[in-house]
Image (cartoon, rainbow, N blue to C red; front, side, top):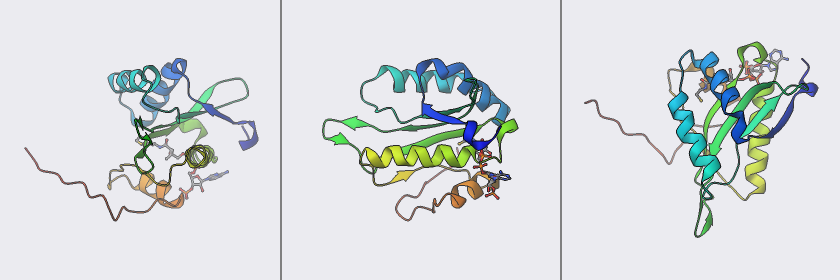
Length: 151
Ligand SMILES: CC(C)(COP(=O)(O)OP(=O)(O)OC[C@H]1O[C@@H](n2cnc3c(N)ncnc32)[C@H](O)[C@@H]1OP(=O)(O)O)[C@@H](O)C(=O)NCCC(=O)NCCS
């Protein structure tokens, strides 16, 4: 594979199996139910604009994806409310720039829709993902702080 053979396109409902497969490969745990709910919300509700993308090889093999939510309420799009929820690149295709291409195309698309800010949650112990996001110009939020309490 070379970077130029990878094509980025909008995610469709029938990408479900590929997204679940790549996510399970990356996380080593199945999140089938999470994706069932997420696909239901994103592809069967009119309140979310399509923003999620997949990266595919020339032969159509899906090798990575990025998912986010952009809520469209009665006052239009939420300019600060766009989220990047999940990104995953098949381990065989990692470290070749696919993740960076996915992020850049995802942000370009949101910018065109008028979004000014995006946020994502990252586990601070996940040094690989923290590094990936900071390389891609994401910074620690100065406006949002997650509060937690053990039960
Ligand atoms: C984080 C993740 C998306 C990165 O995807 P990726 O395609 O490997 O990303 P990139 O190739 O764009 O960049 C990763 C690294 O490869 C490097 N790289 C890019 N092209 C390269 C090349 N041709 N040769 C060598 N390295 C290269 C980048 O510089 C970057 O290095 P760095 O970490 O030192 O900055 C991927 O590792 C992944 O899916 N991780 C799991 C994510 C996860 O946990 N998701 C669930 C919760 S959100």
